[in-house]
Length: 538
Image (tube, rainbow, N blue to C red):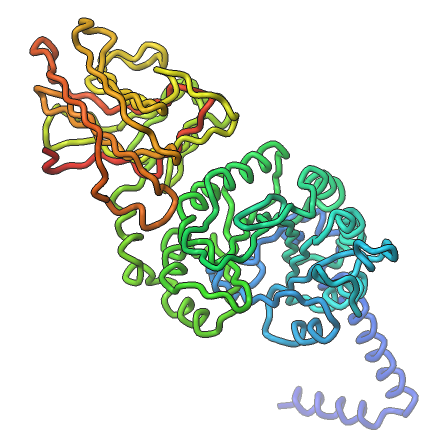
């Protein structure tokens, strides 16, 4: 009680203190507040910026994932909010003050492609030539808002180097997610890219390497997009561009929503092999089917997919059903689940250390060398209830002619030796791109041989099935004219070429794997269907 009285008396003396004393205390408080304010503003936090470099756990660099930077993301890219084409002061003010996480702007040079073109980067999207907002002002405004990430889209070659230099100069103020985007390749209905990818990658690695690289294709509109999509050549082009440049940055593949329907196997294969994420964007005024969004939501994990859907109703539908997409799939997407390639059921064999020679994913398998092959982990005894089924498309990326008896695919049964890619012993079913199919064996008599020819289609795409009943081998091939649409996954009543050959009684019926092998390294074989089927075949 005595101590309390003493404290009370001390407080009264302080209150009655002289005016100069109170003024001194007040000045000290004001100075302290000002110092703290400038300290926090300069360091963008209470931890000194130079210590962040020495203590990595405290450093936030521009290549930080939005999933980590924004706590409300909750490891779901659908929770990241985007503002697109923020290229004016009014749009920037709205984005900064609104509930937006990532602000995207487009950069060109002032007077782009005119005789008045200057070296001043401004925020505008072609075909515009100027803007009321320069890149310098855009960055200055964004830097003041610590809760925003940015995505900078390079619209022209001329703007690449100077834009990256300005980002480098602003790096200390950009401790937040920074994405750099460029359409580096020509895509469906697209025009020639305005950004040279070799030059772009070189300048990014030199000037601003700590970022997330967003890569895409130029695309265009068409009266009917139902048959359009990103092709296997499209995704292979992106794959090799990234591999050749040896990019180490996080990669995001930018995808137009109206083109995803026929592109899921290709895009899943690409992102699996690049360890990349996807960014799905919807062009203003363009229609996208809800079931198509559900398909990509079903195939891509929430933490590996970002969404910028312009249509409010569609965006609301996506948010509501994002994590329960399976019941909302189309019948075609559900059918793919029954036939797609599953890498955990297969083994790689041969010289697969050869770079890019064998590239599997959860949706497809790409073989690019005759020195590699795959075989089933499970071994099977001959039975009419077990068949190997698949669909293969051959790509002529090297523009080479077909070589008879070589350009094609082999499936081996009852193999007794398969450690050497050049000496696989077993029953061989060969499918030639020139229309030849045959059944033979290198370790049986020459009488064990049967072949036929069919007229191949222009799509270089085939659906095949092989069954070893125990007494005969049945090899069927269907020529497909449509190998790229989602609807083509359904079995059609195509005319099939069929070979049947009796198996000698001298051959044992031990359990052996199915083996699948490309025979010509001048072709790329893409399997978007490959599975062993159990059930009645004949």
